[in-house]
Amino acid sequence: MKITPTKVRIEFQQFNVEAQRPYDERLNEKEIVTESLSDIPHVGDYIGFLKEEDGQKGCFKVKTRNLTFNKKDGEWQIYANVVLEEITSDEFDKTIKL
Image 1 (tube, helix red, strand yellow):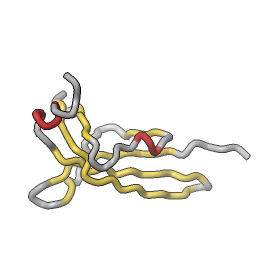
Image 2 (cartoon, rainbow, N blue to C red):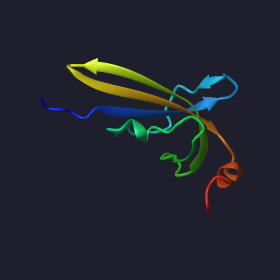
Image 3 (cartoon, rainbow, N blue to C red):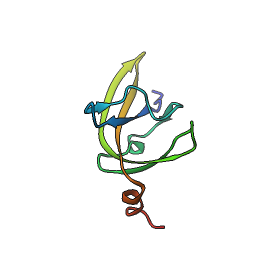
Image 4 (tube, helix red, strand yellow):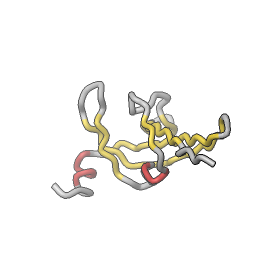
């Protein structure tokens, strides 16, 4: 029996404080695909995210992560939706060694 690695697709969305839900568009312009669930950040993790459109780094904290498991043509695919809250660069800088 041949074992095929499971594909994990990760989508990041920014949390909209006013609407109390994520914006509809994703932060990552290109699809992020990995083969390990350990590559998905956990709630509470801090993330520096480079925005392709303007080259600016956004500073974020993981608010939620939702996983959807889908079996298609005998193979499992996992979709991870990670919602990020924007934080200040000062708050982010406190979490890293400069």
